[in-house]
Length: 196
Image 1 (tube, rainbow, N blue to C red):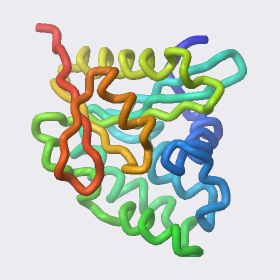
Image 2: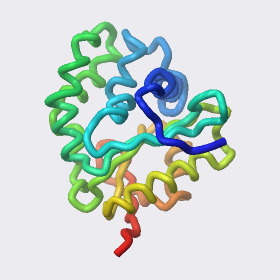
Image 3: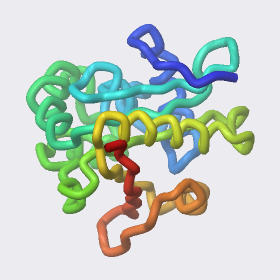
Image 4: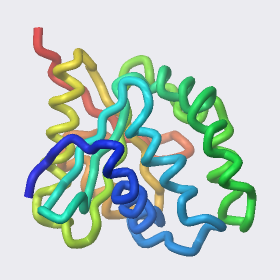
């Protein structure tokens, strides 16, 4: 078991993990018109975008979990809207009703610009397949990501969760995140200790 930088060669594994955890932590296979949609919006852009990071939890046969994100949400959102989404959007026409909200979000140039970005400029996503859960992988990945961001001088990180994901709601406070109520999705933030 090791944490290592994810690379573009991990694209398919990252996309698969995203799909298998994309329904509030459960398997999202077959719910959308194209099983690649979620990964193209929520996972694989972090293998390519500005100020991004991707760390994989690898148990020897490839990633079974990851933490991905960016140190600069504003720059990432601009790149996503101007470069990434136009390069992949044609692969994802509206096919089924479940696609609508994901496609609408992907096309929104302010989707990631929540009101805490000034104080918590980084954001991240973490997903683990069931075989990697409950064994410390999530905590280890979060701590590695937060240490990486702090080493880059980032003072805070945020994330949001699907309100249906009770496991995530319990997990994030245990790894130093605080819940900020009053947003359309549940928002969690964590201050980082930046070395002076």
